[in-house]
Length: 173
Image 1: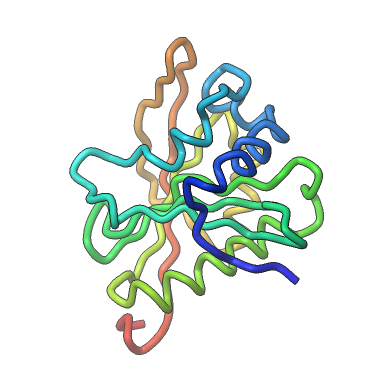
Image 2 (image 1 turned 120 degrees about the vertical axis):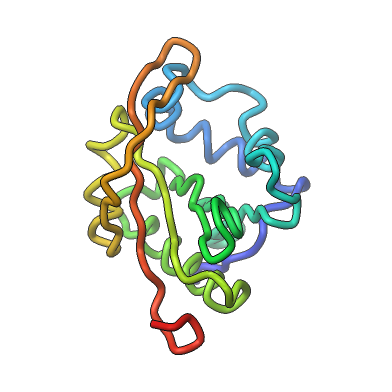
């Protein structure tokens, strides 16, 4: 049975192992294979102006193994929105529905823990769109039509924004 819990500093090795198990993702969005400090960076990095308590890195654990990770930003870019910075599935668990299950658990977390959030938002980088766009659309995300230039060192691309409205009386839906 899958268990959702926050990924903390003591889980950094498991997180790094998950990131390294799917090198294609890092290569598509950075132009490089995973780096040795990627897990630590994921736990620490957040947009300027977002308080530390506004970031949650949630892990989906099965039989003690981290099988998926979801990076959530509360109130970003505005108060009623949560931004999904990353959803990544361990390479050995891809194609089994783990990503959709991880998203479902993360959405339940947002609904339960962050009652002010009415919208989930994310960006899909064009260099990762073939793998990611259909996944997010199946989960109910729709393109906002907004795009931004995306650069990571030598990789130059475009990121496209997607949103999903959360339903429920307490959210005005």
